[in-house]
Structure formats: C-alpha cells, structure tokens
Image 1: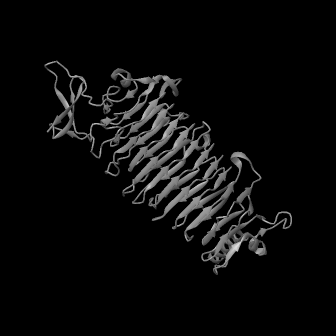
Image 2: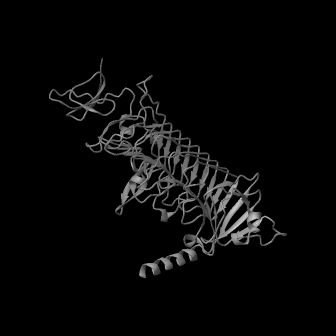
Image 3: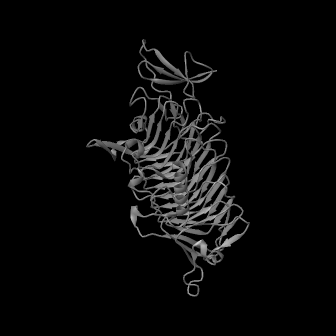
Length: 482
C-alpha cells in the first residue's frame, strides 16, 4: 500500500512538473513561431499581431521532439520569461535568418541574481547551423552527439550560465566563427566533459570577439575555456578578447583528464588584453602557440596566474603530450611574460641553431614590461623585479632569437629578466643566446656534474649530437659530438 501511494505521489509530482511544458508530437513537422502561436497549448503567444507581427512571447517551456524542426524566421523577436521560459531541442532547427532574429529572456532580476533563459540541444538533436542570431540573457547549451556550426551571432548580458557551452560527446567537430560576446559574466565559449565521459570532441574557434566578459565571481575562469582530448583537433585563431580588468582569464585549452590521443592544439593570431592572464595550456597535449598578442594581462590574485602565456604539465606522467611550441608572440605588461611549469613540461621558445631540423624555431617572441614583487603578503604587477620568462621546471629550455624587455642585449641584462637555474638550482637552464656556450672555467678541479641532450634527457656520458654539460662551478657548455 505504501509503495502504491509513493508511486501515485511521484506520478502526480511529475505531471505537475510537466504542466507548463509543451512537447511537439514528433511527426516530422516544421514549426515557425507564428505556427506555434496558433497552438494554444504551446504557450507561444503573439500579443500585438498588428503592431508587432513578429513579436512572440513564451512564459513556459517547449520541447521540439525528434523528427520535428523549430524554424526562426527573419526579423523574429522571441521573448522568454526568466528560467520558466526555456527551449529544449531533441530534433532540428532552422536558425539562419537572412538579416537577423532575436531570442531574449525578460528577467525580473538584475545583475548576479538574474536568471537567464536557456536553449538546450539535447542528445538526439541533429547537426545544426546557426547564423545571424542574437541571444540576450539566454544561454545556448549543446549536449548533442551531432555537430554545431554557429557564425555571426551575438550573445549578450548572460549571467550565471556560460553563454555558449558544449558538453562534449564523440566524435563531434564544432565550428564557432565570427561571433560576438558582450557583457557575459561567466565563460563566453566553453567545452567540457564529465568525469564519467572523457572529452573526445574537436572545435574550431575563429574570428570571435569577446568584450567585457567574466568577473571577479568567476575566480580567474577564462572566457574561452576549451577541454581537449582525443583525435580531433582544437584550433583557436584570430579571436579578440578584451577584458574588464577583473579576475577572469583569457584563453585556456586543457586536457584535465589527460585523455589519450593526438591532442593537437593550435592557438594562433589571437589578441588578449586586460585579463587576469592571457593564454594558458594545461594537461597532456601537442600545443603550438604562434603570433598571439598578449598585453596588460596581470589582474590576478596569484602571481603565477598573472602571466601573458602559461604552459603547465603539458606532458603528463604517463607520456601524453609533446613539447609546446612558442613562436612570434608578443608578451607584454604581465607579472610574468612566459610561465612554464611541471616536472615533465618542455617548451621550445626558439631554437635557431638547428636549421632544417623539426626542432628549428626562429623564436621571434617579444617580451617586455613584465614583472612582479611581493607587497603585504601578496603579489603585484611591478617593473622593479622584471620577469620575462619563468622556467619553473627541471628541464633546460631553448629561448633563442627573441627580443627581451628594457632593450636588454647583454647576457647580464637578459639573465636578470629570467628565472631559471641561476634563480634556483633545482630549475632547468634557459638557453637564450644563439651559439651560447656558457662560461668556461679555468679551474683545474672543475668536474662535470650533469649531461643532457637537447630534449632535456640526462645521460651518463656525452652522446652523438649536441650535449648540454653542467660543471661543478655552475658553468654550462654546449658540446657537439660527431
């Protein structure tokens, strides 16, 4: 009897919860907003058919079933009320108006208490193309096995939810081109996964503009935050991120679960300014960071987040990932220009001597006006203690062919702007001078204490090729064995 009563109550609660939800029949029909407004049960209304014939409202929730399609027509203006007005898509959409169309949430709250509406594409949703839309106070969540191609769309005034969020499911490859994100106070573009389902999706993020997004509540969460993993590539190119000088970061690509695969990442031609940090790559991946401009990114509470570019644990303990390639970037006005950390992490920041080799990198990075100092138990941006490059790894690093801050040209001037072996002897050395052989000692009792190859692997004796030899007096030389 108790079990029957419990089931009856559960059914009643379920019916009550679904009372304001309209579900399309799933009979292969395409529904425009005008057609939905003619179905009383849908909850879609056209309050001013003569004065505003393409203005529609929804106070409840609609579900577009598998086999059915929701079509947004040119100049449509669709208004949802708070979180009670939501759109769930299990089928398909036609959302490419010739000029523009708007879906907005009319909220009774403001600021951090506001409750944005949502448009959710669920697991069964078909491949979708979205063009020329405007989402105001309404987020878009892609939770489908299929792919999304979204371009020339505006997201604005979205609080308490990520503006455009992909919950990755294999083997989708998404395209996010030429969109604009303004005043979105969490992440603008995100790809993530759950602990039970590792990331296996690729994404191409190009030509987007992110303005005044993120805030202090986000705790340095980046406004473009992409989880990488598997065979499909991740590309972040030619985007502009201009911050509001709060704690939010710029661009991050991370393999948080160290998913196996090629994990190829290209971050190229982006501009990031006014953020807590500029660009970050974390976790096992093969990342190339090329021709980016990162300026005035130091608005972070932790020194090691206040960098222009940060490279962290990009080779995992079980060997996932490769040496990170850094070329042609401008790193200016941060607490740290380039920050590299992790026991196994390796970076090629310029290796000019190996012309014709796959390791040849002309460098061409420009580092300037970077530094920090400790004040009252915290860290602030300061040029009194310059730091263009911090090699917080045990591995030696090549950083040849670059331009250093304060017009530094001599070894002593450049060395003063680098934190490496000479800062703490547990750290790897930075080779910044082309043809650099270190300082040769004339003392008779100087002994060899360590021998490395170019990849940072330690050897008992010198091997064929170029050897990095560290001596007991602190000097380091480069020795060629043929």
